[in-house]
Amino acid sequence: MQSQITEMNRTREATEENPNLSSEVQSLKEKLDEHSKQLEQSAEKLSQLQSENTVLRDQNQAHSMAGNKKRRFNTQVRPMGNLNTPNSGEGATDPALGSGVARATREGAENPQVHNLEESDSEPESDKETPEKISATKSSMNAYLEKMFSKRFDAIQSMVERLPGVAPPIRRSNPDSYADTPFVEGIASVEMPRKFSFPNIKMYDGTGDPDDHIAQYKQRMLAVALPKESREAIMCKGFGSTLIGPALKCDINLPTRSKSCFASLSDKFVAQFASSRSLEKTSDGLYEIFQHRVEPLRDYIVRFNQEKVAVPECSIPTAISSFKRGLLPNGGLYKELTMYPCKTMEDVLSRAWAQL
Image (cartoon, rainbow, N blue to C red; front, side, top):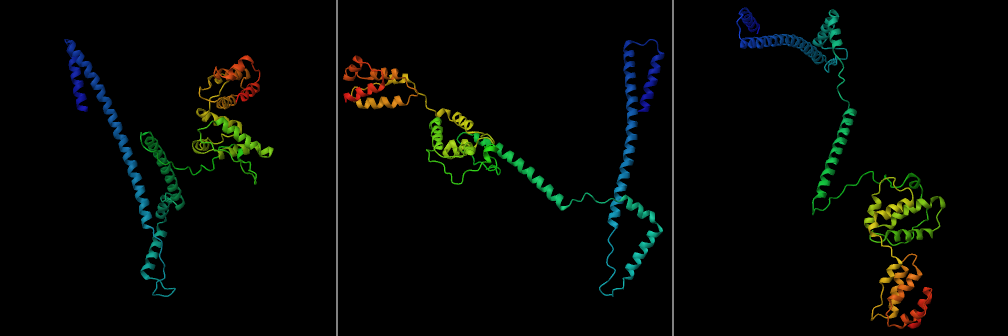
């Protein structure tokens, strides 16, 4: 590389002496100068890398020598065996063994610096793991693997559930699911009375009107004598025992600590099964009831009363007008109500029963 740089410098000096250089020679000269500078920088970097490589090689050799020295010391040091032999008495020793021990003792006394150096270089093997550390490592590894397997299993399970026509797999139960309660602490800590039993009530499966079920449950629980301080908790805890099927599943899957009072519980229950609620009937719906030509007057009165009692806060004038309108025009009751109008529904029904 140095020879190339020298050759380029000579070429550059030769071109400088010639005053009749063309433009191409000038451009070549500039390029040559740039290349020469780059080569000089590369040479400096190469020498620097070589020096660093030499230093690293020396350090590596020093570390390897220290490691070999430690291993040699650990290999050579052995615990001294028992001086007593089975074929000799208690005070007798092996001559060869005794001479070896004496020689080792004498060498240690003559050159104590060797032993001190080896002992200072040697370090206790702290890398050896105790059984407790090994068991802790295994348990943490098992917990990590179990967690990863659970996540992978849940992902596969969710993908299987999306497949059309495939039965959903059996879900695994959470081992801590029983400890998680949907009630708040103030309700969960209240103990049920010992001699208390929930009243019999029709079980709700999610297909009927939720408002009717809550009204029936309230009426049955109000008939039971409950302590005032635990009435709210008993109302909340006993509501789940009146549910079956999909309604029971929805109640069990409520979030933890979500049941704080019976009012919020009933609101969530009605909102969950709002599609099963019956449409509220109005007084104007009574105008859709008509007496058939072959229908007896008794059957018409019974059918009209069934629809009327289903209307909350039914309007009396609307009920009287719709009852008269639904009668057959050529009947005697229709003519009588037209000639003598009634102001109450009781008068209408009394005249109707008189026609039977």
